[in-house]
Image 1 (cartoon, rainbow, N blue to C red):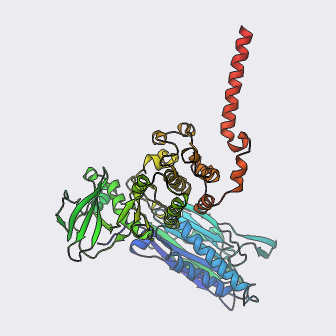
Image 2 (tube, one colour; image 1 turned 180 degrees about the horizontal axis):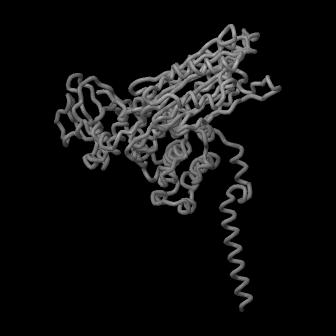
Image 3 (tube, helix red, strand yellow; image 1 turned 90 degrees about the vertical axis):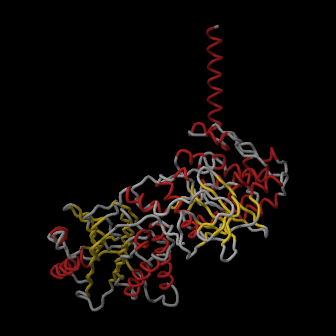
Length: 581
């Protein structure tokens, strides 16, 4: 049972590249292209990189080669769930630090400095990353546009100063741009030895004179190098040409046919055998899915089987999300997250298996611990934060954090379960012909913005996490049941937070202040980092101690001005009454 991604990529390109030493003795330029197949094409896309080692740096050639080779290797090694931007910037940051350390380490007399321009084509979008004076152009419908800007300053008519490059500074500033693709787009990447000595008119002429049937990118590249030589370029010569031949355009009917390849399982009862698994008992059932405890008849090992609800048998968006669940589970694997089981056994129905975790849900723990020790709660919170951080590292939001989705094992470990509401940033970049199912979390634990179809990223997760912490400490919810009915910003702003220590006198005021911040209605007022929230739960924040004596206008400006407006209105009514009387 292999859990494949339920989407495909039909992106097709024609590519060509060429490089030459030109008028120099050594070639310090470097270039690279990678057009993967299968899921790598869908998840990571096509990548093209061009780099120009800085001549004044003794190790310019090594720097440009390192930039190209390591970028192409490391980019495709980043997690599948990361966005193109996150993946590329992580790789570029690491590359820059490595180059800088080489220049300032044992080989400080040698400079490892290079320009770099990278182009990633994923689904129906082009992502550009640029440092230095290499360039990326786009030729569309007879118009040539330069998509990057040179990071250089002209000193004299014949001399320029490079203001930004890989390895030049310990801190790297990368120009980033994303632009929609169209079939027939041609991208041109060049080093300055080419574009400084070939005019835009020449570029357009070479790109336009090749008809669709006779398009030869290798020939175009060689011709442009010849044009640069004719223009008396004194530098190395390198260029790449990529044409978009076909974009993903799978229709809804085709998607539906692929998603419904496996039928929904029949009604499952105790003792029934399905694909070599015996149904032992039903663990949970909802309108969206069912969970069963099953035993592998061959090995005797017990698992949890999740099956889709027949209510959604004709809903491709729901089926796509269900098929995505095990794929997500395998990619966010962590000790604090329930493990998805892979099997080579043929699968005849739509379902997936997870490890069976013996223990109790956090809901059961709350019910059996009405007056918990603060230290006990913090131990659970630390393990829960670690599990949520595993999702965050993979640019994935769980979006349904609640006590029912957390299991405390018999040996004291903690597991987050259920991937049904997960939001994966990297998948959202992939175009789909169907409107994707945006499964909402549980109302009382989800941040207010979730029910407006919005997310504040990790700040929304922190809100849910803080709600669980509040309930662990008090047995109650911070906003009661009122949060479940909120559907507008105005309604959310009227919610009243009940201080934690009002319900549990053992909770310190500074700990309640941390919870109040994490549970702010406005995402901007919440913590932006899990580590900050966790630290403030364990340590008194001096700022919170000061807030107890700050005037209302500094503690809560919105409430202050609402109160001031109310008093002003009351004073006006009294004045008018006295005047009229």
